[in-house]
Image (tube, rainbow, N blue to C red; front, side, top):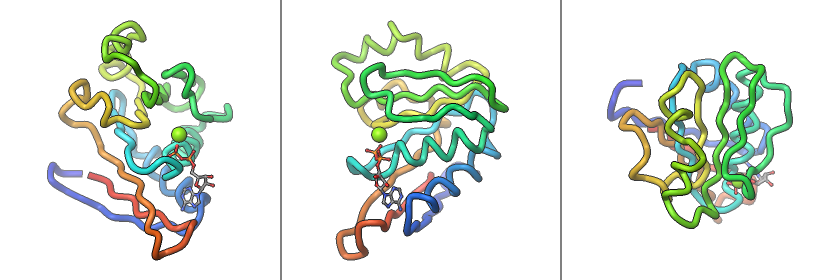
Length: 145
Ligand code: ADP
Ligand code: MG
């Protein structure tokens, strides 16, 4: 995707969001960082599950909320799944060794990435998952930029 490009997807079920993520994972390149933001319950973890599947990772991916980082091997690329929602201080990211993830050969997905905005590489792919109360519980607008 060229710089400045923006794509908007609309999904009507968790399965559709998983499928979208799965398709995106097939295009993923080593060292790519994906920043996931949007509402609580917006579907960041659901997206991460589909993404892992698209990398042919067989482990079940869930929210790593209490560990901040979980790494999955065995797929086409190593997946570093972050959930920084409960991060206290940005220095915790150093302790976890985020640089090896963001600048290594795997791909990184970061739930609640806005909380560590200053650490995100310039070419980070931004994914925002938003609900719309007018369009029902299962509707999500997913903006990729
Ligand atoms: P987050 O990680 O952003 O807090 P989760 O992925 O844990 O959110 O939860 C999303 C919830 O919303 C799940 O319970 C999922 O089943 C539900 N859901 C309903 N519709 C959708 C949709 N279109 N896309 C993703 N999740 C959806
Ligand atoms: Mg989550």
